[in-house]
Structures are given as structure tokens and as C-alpha cells.
Image (cartoon, rainbow, N blue to C red; front, side, top):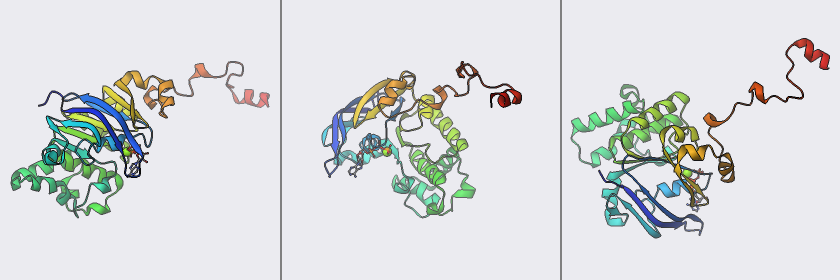
Length: 270
Ligand SMILES: Nc1ncnc2c1ncn2[C@@H]1O[C@H](COP(=O)(O)OP(=O)(O)OP(=O)(O)O)[C@@H](O)[C@H]1O
Ligand SMILES: [Mg+2]
């Protein structure tokens, strides 16, 4: 395993229409680190993640994965190393059935039938998709959350060393979200997770990177930034729910006009 599987220096990226989506990104991520990438809509999270397996190529600066710089001739090796789950599962799922989709990458790896089946079953169970119920379903007919799980299973089955997830909990129901958090917590892989689910970030990732207008404005401990409501507000973020005080604490009631205790008190106040 590489000590620092991801190393990025002076990365900037502008889309063809001239919009500057990333500006001067520097970072290094250690093996088995779990890092949350947070930021407001349009702050550059997805654009950043798309650089990690060469879907977007660096325009300035460099992205090094393992020991390989992201350049066209290294893309095959880099894509075996880094698995990306896209924000929108419709961008990921392209085979007709769930089974065909999850095994597509494995077939390209030339796995024998037995290993292929074992890996695909394992990945499906890991995301809570029972193979008996889902393998032959038409992928395009699944619900948003089911599609997201198929997309995650397809990437897990490839056994990448670095797992990159773009909004993994979006569209998942609470129980599936909990299963996903437990699954990610149990995987000893380097993980980068772009998310608006700050509670998930807090639970899974000891390190958080905050992007704002394409720039890194924070790179450090998750717990510290999640407690800093002024900083979060400045960058259009809100504290995780688990860090918020409930509105209805008795001590917070207006002291000059305490809540009425009885119906009689309400009536007497008019
Ligand atoms: N193909 C494109 N052409 C031009 N601009 C783009 C393109 N794709 C994204 N952008 C712009 O780049 C910026 C960063 O977009 P990106 O999708 O990376 O943001 P994000 O942080 O992932 O947002 P979200 O939270 O909504 O997923 C946005 O301002 C967006 O409008
Ligand atoms: Mg995005």
C-alpha cells in the first residue's frame, strides 16, 4: 500500500466556457485516511473528485495517484487503483440489468466466472441488495436509492485501493444511510467522500476539506470545523444536526414570558 496514495499540487481547472471551478489545490492524503470534502453547491467538489481518476485531466499542476501522475497513458492503471461513485447514479449505470452492470468492470479485468460471481455477490450484500431479488432487475427501473446502491456495489466489486464517493448518502432512506455509514466505517480503504451530509462526515471522517469557490478554505480536523458555526455560515454551510442545540430546551424559553404551564394560565393571558 502506498504511504500517500493521493498527492495534488497547484491544481486548477476551468471548464470550456471559462468558468474557473478549481483554483490552486494542494493536498496529500495518506493511506487509509477517510476525508470529507464539503462545500456549498457549486464549490467544486465533484469537479475535484473527477480529477482523481482522470475523467478530468489537470490543466495546471499535477495529480499523482500512487506513484502515477494522471496523464493519458496511466489512466487504465489509475482507474484500477481509484474507484469513483458518481453523484448521479444514472451517469454510472449503463448496462441493462443490475448483475450485468455490477459485473461489467470485473469482466474487463478478466476474472474467471467463479471469482467474478463471488465478488459481485459480496458487493451486493455489502450494500444491502439481495442478489436473488435484484440481480435480474432492469437497472433503469430502480428507484434513486436502489440505483445509488448498484453504483456503489459496482465500484466495491472492483476492490479499488482508494474509494471516492460523491454524495453517497443522497437519496438513501435512513436505514440504508446507516448501513452505508457502517459499511464505509468497516472498509480499511483510503476514502474521499464529498457530501452535504455533515453528520455523516462527522461520523466517518477525522479530516475535512472545505471548498469555497473552487479553493480550499479549511483542511483539518472534522470535529473542529463542525463546531465553528461562524466559519460554516461564512461558507454557506450549517452545523451538523448532531451539533445543534434543540430549539425547545426549557432553559432557552424567554424568561420574561415563561411558557404557560396550564390551560388556565393560557386563558388568563387572553
Ligand atoms: N460542464 C461544465 N461547464 C461549465 N461549468 C461547469 C460544468 N460543470 C460544473 N460547472 C461549474 O463548476 C462549478 C463547480 O461545480 P461542481 O459540480 O464541481 O460543484 P459541487 O461542489 O459538486 O456542487 P454540488 O454540491 O451541487 O454537487 C459550478 O459553478 C458549476 O456551475
Ligand atoms: Mg457535486
